[in-house]
Image (cartoon, rainbow, N blue to C red; front, side, top):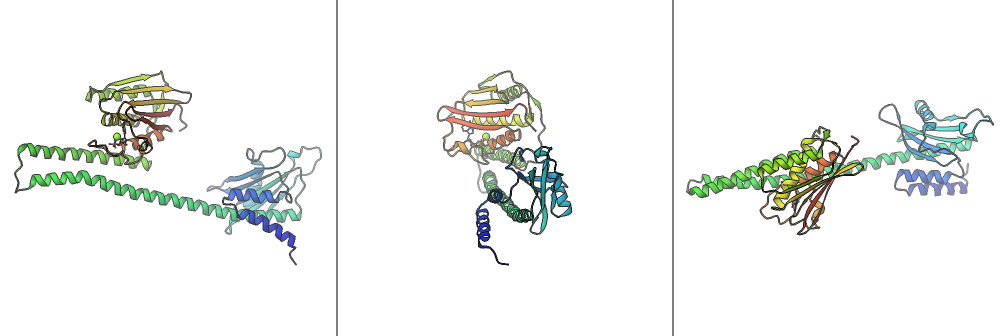
Length: 395
Ligand code: ATP
Ligand code: MG
């Protein structure tokens, strides 16, 4: 049999267009669109076997008359299931009846999809009201099914590559994390070791005042180490999602007032101005949400000392919005985008210590509540943190 050059050109141009597409869905769109004139159908759908016994629909298109394949894909599911069970093509034509509505006369063709020799799913076409599928049409449908099979193989490959990239990224983050931690742990440990070694030296006598100074440094650095380790464990648990949240109805206004009162007992000089609308409860973990505000208070006292703090709560249709504002020195615009990142501290902080984990922890907690947190800042005027929490989260 000799190949008709026209047919060859036709197939060549189609396959070329399909191959040029980077994404499997776009490739399938192209394939189906280029065969539209030769192979007529109303709806098409691709089903693949899910991990259980069911079928997932991964592609659906309605070109034809009346029905919307994306919205209603039930028409093909039965045939797809049979194709997969029998591992072969199925043609299903209704008994023709001119009085029946065209949409009630589906002419179906279902074909098995093989990806690298393995049965992975089924491709189903429907023509409402016919015509039936000729031998040529059946062959074309088989050709399409074969192409879809290889497109699915490249889809699997694409997905595997994306997974691999995300694992690689995760590993890089781990590496960064470990090197940052080692550095952060070494600094306070270095102080503790240095000053205790000095105190223990037999050849030097320190006067009482110096001894107390050294001990105070050791004490401070030990506190810093504890704070660092607690924060690190917390952030690691938040990142790996092993921290359990206990969601209950919460009154955000009462919670913030409690945190403010607690802080006030240790820092009676701190001025807090609190203004809340009458707000409905939210679903949240009280301990964790309190932790967020404790961090904001701690930051305000560290980075905006002596500034009063103003807190407001407002409700909108679906969310509560809290603003937490100080009138401190503010955060330069260039640094603002990074303050919620792990270990990030704005440079030039002087003697103010911190681990750079506080705001990271806040953000993870708020995200776990399906909320948002961000900051705005004006130099020499102050910084405002915004927190938005859903009134009825879909958890
Ligand atoms: P930690 O809270 O873990 O002890 P930290 O306070 O340095 O350490 P974050 O709370 O994450 O870390 O804050 C990150 C950085 O953002 C801080 O180092 C500081 O530079 C800046 N920052 C945070 N809050 C304010 C604020 N209210 N005003 C000015 N700068 C702030
Ligand atoms: Mg902090």
